Length: 267
Image 1 (cartoon, one colour):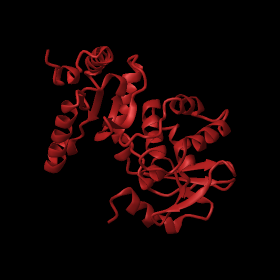
Image 2 (cartoon, helix red, strand yellow; image 1 turned 45 degrees about the vertical axis):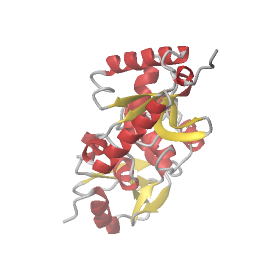
Image 3 (tube, rainbow, N blue to C red; image 1 turned 60 degrees about the vertical axis):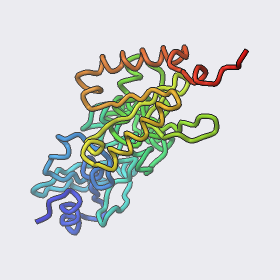
């Protein structure tokens, strides 16, 4: 029996008409857009009928209708779906602004399905549609360069806490030597931030790599802040305050010991 969204979609696909596509969270799951747990747990498949014909009425599916020209069709993993841009727009009726930012960061970032300009055009075309205000709010905070939902949550926590935009997936280079690539950074203050997912804790190779990265950054007088889900959740104020303090101190050069470590002239 099909269990994953992708498997269930392929099983239902032969029953769809040419004017019907999987959409909303179903299409999002098929192409790999990160979704909140409540959406991941949803058993029903979302299907949109493009045009004036009747919406799909099948057990285990939710039928939607869209005007001709507002939703386009593509095929992914053997299933007809709405295009990534149209999928993002449809998600605005089901996700919060923050969840849309995460979805948008994925689309223009590590998934690479669309560009930020394509999202802007799509949102402009949805003037007057349900969810357009949420789309505009999310679009203002979507950034290329993110590689995980955790990185997006960390960036949002920092900027909404009053800090400037951090650099994303920043290469730390000192005196022409590459040291490490970090999730987020305030280069002028030499503050690096790494989001620690469960993989960092459970995978020995990833854990060792993280430790080595931290030591290499310490050697060149960079601070490394490790972030967990709690830091961008219930402890967000404490986390933002800590990063703010480090950025202020870093910009003043207080933690730069390289000059003092250089040999001093004799006499």
